[in-house]
Amino acid sequence: MFDVNAHIHTPYSFSAFKSVDEALDHAATEDVKVVGINDFYSMDGYGAWKEGCARRGLYPLFGIEFISLNAADQAAGLRVNDPNNPGRTYISGKGLAYPVKLSGKPLRQLEEVKAESNAQVEKMCGKLNLWLQEQGSDVRLDFEEIKAKLTQGSIRERHLAKALRLALYPDAENPAKLENELRSKLLKAGGAAFVPEDPRAFLPTETVQEIIEAAGGIPTYPFLADDAKGNFTDFEGDLMQAADTLKKRGFRSVEFITTRNTTAVLEQYAGYLEDEGFIVSFGSEHNTPAMEPVRLHTRDAAELSEKLKAINWRGACAIAAHQAGKDSIAAGEDLIIKALDSSLRSE
Image (cartoon, rainbow, N blue to C red):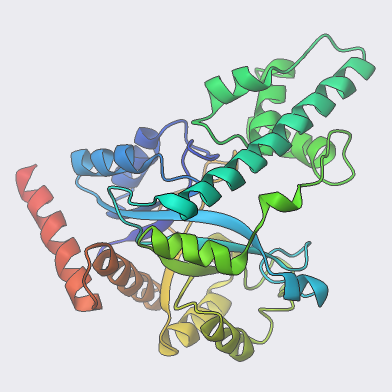
């Protein structure tokens, strides 16, 4: 059994890492052997991920992430896995095909939602420049320059916060903290540069599932589970009901970002969901400026418990099997072990 981190963002969306190579260097140094790329609206980093894993003796998993909208949940005021926006639902895809095989209508839908997301941030950039002018500042942000220098094509509000921090406070003592503050005060709801997201930036949940399946992947529901105050969203508070609803909606895979949760809650939720037949995987995201370990831990422990490590390993094996067109955890385990044994022998 090897250590796994199945959800890592790279600069192809937004990341604590400056490059794919930096992310994989951290994984290799921390002896995390199975690693999954999981960028918003993008599969563009897959080639670099696969090549970088091969050079370091790591096993690659291929994922993607969307923000979707469930209209019925929104109408009911039901908070799903966005604690602030009823109906808004994050969805990941696991085990997508590589080389990428998406084409036709699903590809157009992916490109359109990515373009809408970029357009919203471009409007934010314009409002941010107006605010800077009102403050008497000579600083102006160039959207295309930010896109060219700080991104790999997908630009998010965190890139604006980073660009503004670099322009105003290039030598900040705690850049991650400052970027988070700038984003919170200026770019989020109520901020001077906030721009509401266009409804066209949110595909229906069912459409996102169809895109993921068309790309060869497994639609995956990301659980928030308990927050720092022990609270749960409306959808997730009743675990049995959430599991039943997910099954009815066609999900057979779930994931957790382990730093959000206590060990006790994570063991309860992940254990129950695995027993109910879901593929369960864990990740770290790394989609904020803060640099954290790639080796996973929970909110209240320095590393995963043996129970959680075993669940995560079985989930990774199931995803690896799916990527390879096989249908069992045992087949995926065999694929990973043989690949990693071969790489270790060649070192």
